[in-house]
Length: 200
Image 1 (cartoon, rainbow, N blue to C red):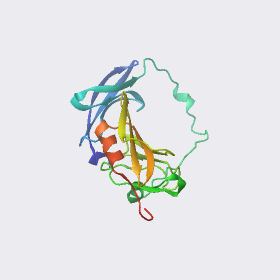
Image 2 (cartoon, one colour):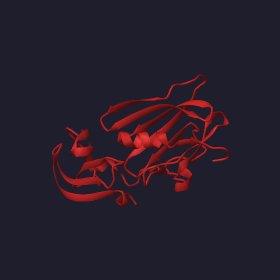
Image 3 (cartoon, rainbow, N blue to C red):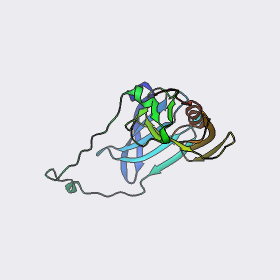
Image 4 (spheres, rainbow, N blue to C red):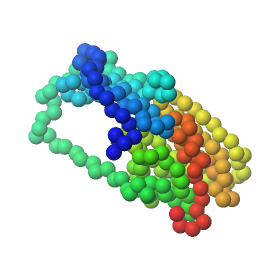
């Protein structure tokens, strides 16, 4: 499903930490997500280097190993292996949430391909979404006093934090969308938050 939202191309990579890499270029098919360049070790598949790419092919964030050493004997086949099963609800459930203090709320817009990573009943003031590569979370803070409408933005590398004061019915709330998505995506998600007259 990830290929529905990104274009993938593979080429010979560079030498990273003394290891020959294979380069995977991941290009978004829409403007609601970033692109990625990943350099994987040709022999082991280990991620040696990655970059988050914004508009105009601008590198927003980069990670890479400077040096690397490992022994192939350390991963014994008879060792205990832990498996954790991920829970991903139905995509329709990803748009629903229940607010704290019994105030129901919903998210009316998500970029195509993003689904919830957690149960709709868990962490009632938070929702986290992923498309398989990018991840962002939505936080609601219910305020006791009045709040003026407005917004604030902090960007650090490939991470955007967008905060907006708004009202959910008569309730003042502070909405924060934070994650590896462009500002316009975070703003559109925040703008789509609405209250429910009945059960969401």
